[in-house]
Image 1 (cartoon, one colour):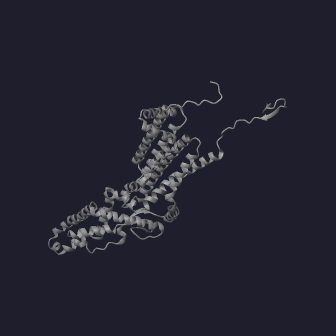
Image 2 (tube, rainbow, N blue to C red; image 1 turned 45 degrees about the horizontal axis):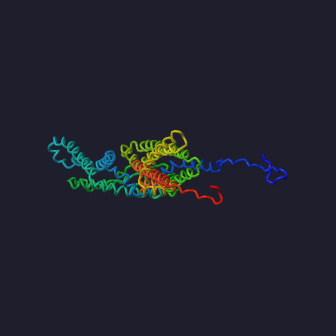
Image 3 (cartoon, rainbow, N blue to C red; image 1 turned 120 degrees about the horizontal axis):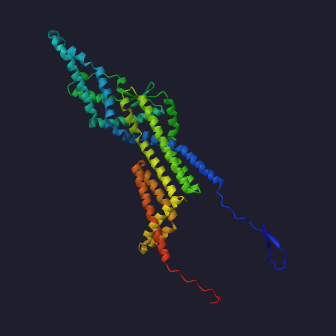
Length: 433
């Protein structure tokens, strides 16, 4: 298309091309990058969460001990250990045979005394069981439990690295926990209370162990541990970076926020499914063993940190969906946003002059200030690596409160700018009055 050029009088007309207006089309490469980031992040979120839990819980002695510490007060765990210790002592000491031997001469003269051997044997066995359970409920056992689990965590790491010595060891195709310290302490308590017949009774090593699980695929676990352990603590950071990069590159960030929220919520449900399946497999693996009745409470306690993270993922995803809807270009979101912003800015407009001066600076820098508030909320959520629902809601309340303050200051700054007098326009020389 062209138009005639008549800038020179009397000259021939020339056609000047008229360029069509440029259309601001989104870059295909940018959109593809957003899709790739979201797909990778979605696929890696669940593995990253599980790997981070494993790295922080199983590799950190302090966190591991703090995690399993409450098990010392679990009736199921105490019952499992009490059963193991009591059965071990009673298997090595035949109380009824000892009584028959001790009263053999007396029983020969008075056969009716034979009737007392059974009740006396039962009473002594009952005393053994009672002493075991009293010890397991004592502060002494609580201290011993901490020491046992400290060694168990260190032994588990050595086991995954190929070293099969320690409190947790591999016996054939079974991973076992050594409870010899508990048995020795209980024997000493019984000896101190007069049952000296237990003092020199040897207890075979096999009777000092509790089977934790069958481990026919331990070699595969070692391979996975050797490969995944160095990456575990950084994988969660990579996932967060992918989500953030997708949000930065997205042209429609509210919609991207909704998508990220949906992906986080979906991964939270996937983690819940994995935990449920893993729990049943763990219980089945220990079924029929001494530790079987305590397997469920042990599993729930050991993975409590991961389960809390799952809940945070779910709620964070739902919150991001709401935020994306609130910030999006839709009728209801726009209406709610307009009402809230107008209400907050009207509060700011009513504030005194000094606040308006600060509000002017806030109004000109509000975009990056909002980003800073969001980053502060993330820091509060992740501070101390103790992610929980209460921490999430506290960080959310902090972010919402600070954003509200920013909007109030924006209103104060705009009101101050609007109230300033407009300087009169200067007259141009040579113009008519």
